[in-house]
Image 1 (cartoon, rainbow, N blue to C red):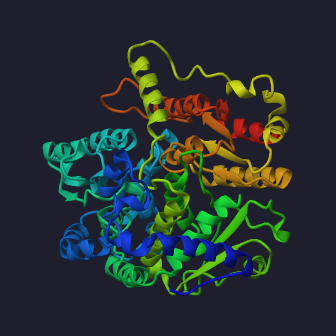
Image 2: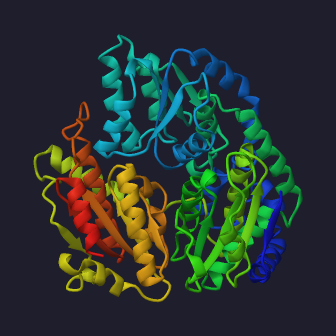
Image 3: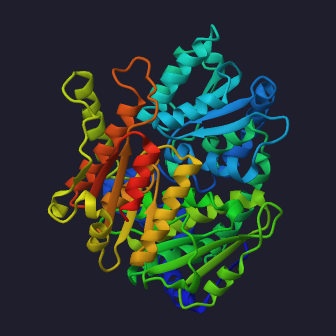
Length: 549
C-alpha cells in the first residue's frame, strides 16, 4: 500500500512504531491477544469477542455465493433497497452507495439512519413500497432507530401486499431478537453475521457487503482488495496501518488530538465512517482522538497546533487527483499522512487500514478500543422520556427555546448566543454543531456555512454531525474524552410528523426525545452543552439561528 508522510509526522510515527514493536503489536493482534490493550477481566471479555474483523474478508468471501445468489434472485423484483440501521450497520453501506453510485439494471440503495420525520418522509416519497426491499440491519436487534423505521415501513408495505415480510431481510448476530422477529414476520432472508465483530468494525462482513451486492457493486473486488492489504498488514510491522496508528496515538500524547481528514470529493463520504470508527474507539477514559471530517480546507493553514492531517488521494476516474492546496499542506509544519487508493474498489483496503490503525492507536493510548461505555446514557434518558410521554406524564414538544448545562448558566442567552459560545472556548477545545434534522441540501448548505464561520472566528476545530446518527459515532467521544468539547444541540419541530405504528408517539417526539436525552447525558457528565429548539417554519427559524453567529 502506497503511503507517505512529511517530516513533521516522521518523528511522531517513529516513536509509535517503537512502542508497537516493543509490544509485539502485529503478532499479538493476529493472535487475538486481548492483553495488548487491557488485562482486567471486564475488558478482556469484551475484547476477546471483538477481534473477528482482523481477517473477516476471508469469512465473507467464503459466503459470497450465498450473497450473489440472493442478489440475483431479487435483482429484477425491486427498484429500491432501503437500509434501516444506525452507526456501524449503516455508515459502510452509505460510503459504498455514494462512491459507486447506482449500477445500471440494479436496484438503487437508500440509507435511512435517522428518526427525523422529514428524513423518513423523504425516503418514503422516493419509493414504491411494493417494489422496495428493506434491510433491517442491527447487531443487537434492539436499537430504537431501525426498530421504529421497521414498524413504519412494514405497515406501509402491508397496505399494498398481503405478505409484507417478502419485502424484508435482516442482517444481525446469532440469537438476537431481530432474528426471532424476522422468523415471526416471514422475512425473505436472514443473514447471520459473525458474532465476534463490533458494529463499527463490520464493514467487510455481511453488514457492509450484503447491501452493496444487492445494488450491483462487485463486492468480491472490494474483499480481495482488503485481503491483499491484510496480508501486508499481517507481515509488515511497519505497514501503512501501523504508521497511521502510530501517528494518531503518539500525536495525541503530544497534545495534537485533532485528526483532520482530507479527502477528494469522490471519497469524501468515507470521512463519516472513519469519524465513527476513531471517535467511538478512542474517546474514553478521559482521552480521545478527535476526528474532524467534512471540514473545508482553509487557505494558509492557519490552524491551532493541535492538528494532524490524514489524506486519502485517488487518481481513479471517480475522483480528482490530490489538489494543490493539499500538496501545500503536506509541505507545511503540520504532521501530514497520505495514503493512495489505486481505484474505487480499493475502498476495501481503506476500511481495513483504518481498523488496524485504530487498534494500534488504542494500544499506544492504553485504552480498550472495542467498548463504548458512555453510549447507553443518552439512550436510557430518551427511552424514559418516551415512556413518560406514553403514560401521559410529559410532552417532548414543550421545550424551551434554549437550555444550557449548569456550568454555562448565566453565561449564555439566545440574543448573544454566537458570542457567548465563542467565549466558552479555550486551549485545545473543539466545538460540535449537532442538529437533529433532515440532511437536505438546504440544511447542508446552511450548516456548512455556519461551521466555516465558527472556525474563522475561533480557529478551534468545529465538528458537525446530524442527530441521532452521531450518537452512534462521536457520541461516545463527547462523553468519554478529556472534556474539551463545547456542544450546540439543535432540535426542531418537523415540517410533517410521521406516526410510528404501535407506539404512543411519532418520529417527531422520538427524535426530539433523543436530542433532549443527549443534552441531559452530556450535562450529567459535566460537559458544556447548549440546546436550542427551532420552531416552525423551519427554514425561517434556521436562518434566524444562523444570524446569531
